[in-house]
Length: 244
Image (cartoon, rainbow, N blue to C red; front, side, top):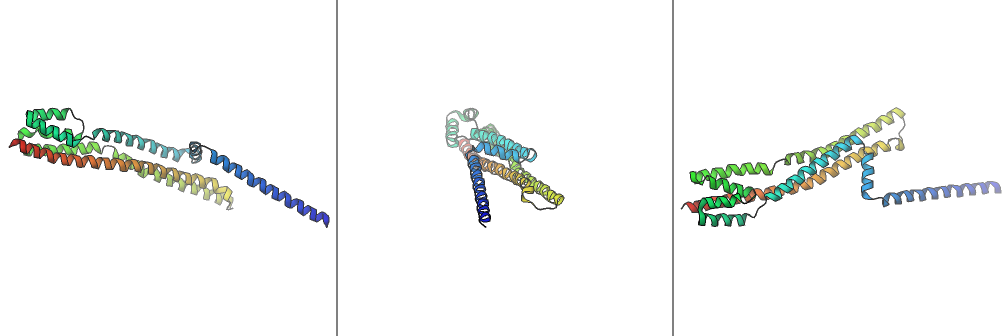
């Protein structure tokens, strides 16, 4: 009886020590995982997601960022001090006439200066002709401002769709394994489910990043367009006053 009790106690101590060692090992692995740099963890998760869908999602992110950066640089260069330009054109009209005002517009960058130039260039044909030129050229400049923005919205839409597609394919593979083995085992399908979910996560991250840039670009375009419209009205008023 004592031998049996001793054996049970020994087995209990062995199980307890094994459990403690396993828990300590898991804690060490978790601590090691937490101590890894974020970029390394991101790289490992990206590799686990699979090269096909993750590569396409990454391509969407790179192309989307390239378009966003190009648009932001262009829009910032297109932004001008319209109040200052208006005053300069008005002073030039009063002192040197239309040609002096056109020279001011030539030396100023941005769509507002270009619209001013087109209106001043057609003022000799009449005020109505100048107004039509301003409106027409304003549409051209608006198209330049919105150039390639549709590509950015496309990448925002495609990235999460690709992630969801990767998730669906991963789940299909997991259920195929269950059907082939005939046994529902968590360890059997955990890898496929993890890969499936990783593609969705990276697709959503890509869409979120690009959406932030997209909203900034749209807000910048709206601001410039409003500035162009106000400046067009001011130009027609100046030309009407100059004609009197």
